[in-house]
Image 1 (cartoon, rainbow, N blue to C red):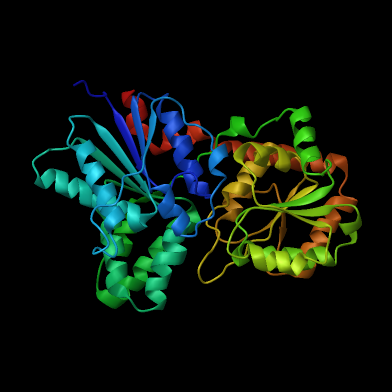
Image 2: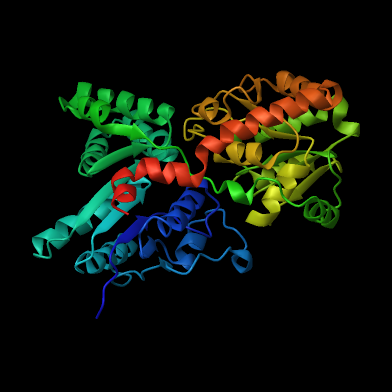
Length: 421
C-alpha cells in the first residue's frame, strides 16, 4: 500500500457549522494542496452530533465542495449509551492514532483547545506509547471562545484544576498560536491568574511561546463579484443596491443585534434603507419577535457562502456593533475582513476585543452599547458621506483585509512546511 508523502490533519468544527474558524480550516486546507501536501484531512464531528448540539448550521444541500485531495472525516462515536460522554472524542482520537501509525510526515493543527487539542495530544501520546514513532509536528491554535468562554469561565467559577488541564494541554504542543494579539494578551492574563492561585508558571511559558496567526480568508471569493450576479441575488431577495443596512453574523446578544434593531427604529435613514439581518443564532427568535411590527426589517436565515459575498457588496453599510459579554468577546471579526474585501458600503463596528486588528483605520467606529451613537453613525454614513469618502474608505478597507489572504497566512503559519516544499 502506497502512502502519501506529506499529510496535514486539521482537527476542527468544520462545515456545516457557521463559524469563522470552519472557514479558516477550509482555507488552510485548500492552500496546503499548493504547498506540497498531497493528503489533507479535516477531522471533525458527525452531522447529527452538530445538529443535536444546537449549533448554527449552513444549509446542508448548499455546502461548497472541497478540492480533490481534501478528505473530511467524521468518525463515529465509540461505545454505546453506557458511555454518557466522550464517545465522539474516542472516535476522533482513535482515527488520528490510525493516521499517525502510518509512516507519513504529518503536521497536525487543532483549532479550539476544547476539545480538539485534547484529541491531538492524546493521539500523539498514544501513538508514541504504542511504538509507532509518528513523524508529527503539532500546532495548537487558540481561537476566541477558548479564552472568552472556556478559560474565563474556569476562572470566574474558581475551577483552577480545569484551567490547569487546559494550559498543560495547550503547552504540550510543538507550536502555540493565537488568532489575534488580543487573544494572546488574554491567554497570558488568564495564565497569570492561574499562576497566582496555583503557583504554576504558565504565563511565562505562554509569553515566550505563543505567536499570532490571523484567520486566513480566500480573498478571491470576495473581491470584485460580477455586478450582474450581485443584482440578481438582490432581486431574488427583494432588495436593491445601497438599499439596505446589512447585519451578517451570528444572531446573538454579544454581536450587538439588539442594539442595532433598537437603533434602526430611531434612524433618520430608515425610510431610505431596510435592515437585513442575515444569519442564525440563539437570539434569532427573540429578535424576530422584537421586529415583527417593522416591515422594514428583513430576516434571511438561509444565506450560503456565495450569496454572502453578493449581499455584502450590495449593501449601503455593514453593521456589526459587537460588544463584550461574559460568555463572548469578538477576538478578531472574520466577517469584518470579508466585508472589507467584498466592497460595498462602509463598515460600522466597535473596538471590542480584536476588531481593531481586523479593520485598522478603514471602518467607522462607535462605542460598544451606544445605541444613539450607532444610529447617528449609520445616518451619517448613508445620508451624509460623499461617494468620494466612501470610495477612499473602501480602498483602505480592501488593502487592510488583503493582509489576511489565505496564502500569506498559511506561509507564515507553516514556514518550515513551505520551505520544505
